[in-house]
Length: 491
Ligand SMILES: Nc1ncnc2c1ncn2[C@@H]1O[C@H](COP(=O)(O)OP(=O)(O)O)[C@@H](O)[C@H]1O
Ligand SMILES: O=C(CO)[C@@H](O)[C@H](O)COP(=O)(O)O
Image (cartoon, rainbow, N blue to C red):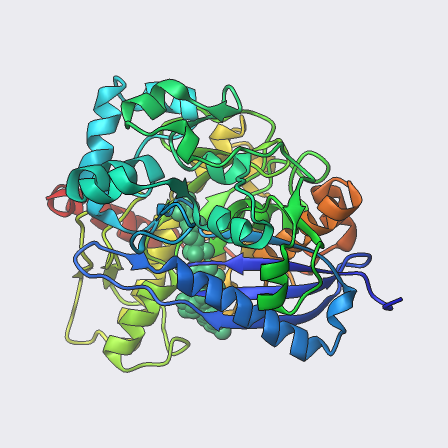
C-alpha cells in the first residue's frame, strides 16, 4: 500500500498548466509540475489550441510525478480548474474545430452589447444569470462565431468550456459544474440550470452542452484506459467535476459555506480579479455574479490587464519587473488588451503626466498602480453584492487575501498594500487554484465537503501583513485620469 493517498489538482490557466500532487489527508503539496500554454492573436483576438492545453496537462502531470518520486499507484483522484469563459467547439470525435476563443478576446464586444439589448438591458441579465454579457462571456463568443464563422458554428457537435474539455478527456464523459457554467451567460444562477430561453436566444442546441454536475464533491467519472496510458496514471481513479479557476482558488482558500464567507480576495494573474464567497445570490449588474463550486456564490470583478500587462511595460522599458518605483505624477492605465472592468473593450494603454524628471522606474511603478487601482475600484461593488456595506468599519478593515502569480512579486505586494490600506494575507502556498482543484479531487473520492477539507488543510494559512496608510493621493490621481479619459477610451 502506498504511504500517501495522493490527488492531483490541475490549474489550466491562460499562461500555463500546473499539476499539484497533494496529500489528500494533510493537503501537503508534494510536487508541482508545470508546462506552458501558447496564446495567439492580435487586434483583440486571443486564442489557444485546446490540444495544447491537453498536451500541457500531460506534461505537467509527468513532471509532477517525476519530481514527487511517488509511484503512480499512489494517485487516487484528479480534478481540473480552468481559465473561465473560453469557447471550445468540438467535432463528433471530440476534436477542436478551431482554436478556443479565450476570456480576454474582445472581438465579441459588439455581440455582447447586442445580447444585453435583446433581453431588455443589464438588470434583466443580472437577475437571471447573475451576470451581464460582456465580451468575455461565452454566449458573446458563441454569437461572434455564428456571425463570423457560421459554418464552424453549424458543424459543432459539442460546445465546452476549457475545464470541461479537459475533464472529458480524462473521464470520457461530458460534464461541467455550476461555477464555470455560471460564466457562460446561458446558465441561470436563479434556477441552477441552463436557461432554455437564453439558449434559444443564441440558437444553441442544449444537446451540444455537457450536463451540469451537482455542487460540491462530485465524481463525474473514472480515468479512462486511454487517458491513463497517456498520463501514466492508474486507470479508474476518481475524476471530479472540477470548476473555473477563480472558484477553485476560493475552495483552496477555504472560502465557502463550510468555511469563511464574505472575505475579499484579490488574484493577480493575467487577469486581475476581486471576489468573495457569499450566501447571497448576486444580481448587481456591476459585478459578475458567479456560482461558487460548493453551492454558495462568487460575486467577482475581472480586469483584462494585470501581471502580463505590467511585465510588458517592464520589457518595453528594459527594466526588471521589481525595478519599479512609486512617486511622480505619471499615470499609466495599462489597458493593452482593451478592458473589461470598466467595460472598455477597444481601449488601449494610456500614459499621462510625463515630466522631464520622470524616470522609467516611475513609469513602471505607474503601470503597477494603474493595474491595481483598476481592479481594486471594483472591490466595493463585490462587497455590496455580498450584502455588506463597504463603509462599515468592520468591512473596511477586513484583510485582503492575495493570490495568483503576482502575489509572489515584491512590488505587487507593496502596491496593493499601499493602495488598499487593508491588511494582507498572502498564503504560503502559491498555487491556490491547483490546491482548490486538489480539494475537489479529494472530496470526490471521499464524499467530504471540498471547502471543509481545504479549510482543514489550512492551505490559505499565512501570517498577516498589517495595513499601511492608504495612498489616497495616488488613488485619486489614477481614478481622476480614468474618469476623464473614459470617453476617449470608449471610442
Ligand atoms: N516573482 C514574481 N514577481 C512578480 N510577478 C510574478 C512573479 N512570478 C510570477 N509572476 C507573474 O505571475 C503571472 C502568472 O500568474 P498566474 O496566476 O499563473 O497567471 P495565469 O493564471 O493568468 O496563467 C505572470 O504574468 C508573472 O508576471
Ligand atoms: O475571466 C476571468 C474571470 O471571469 C479570468 O479570471 C479567467 O478565469 C482567466 O484567469 P487567469 O488565467 O488570469 O487566472
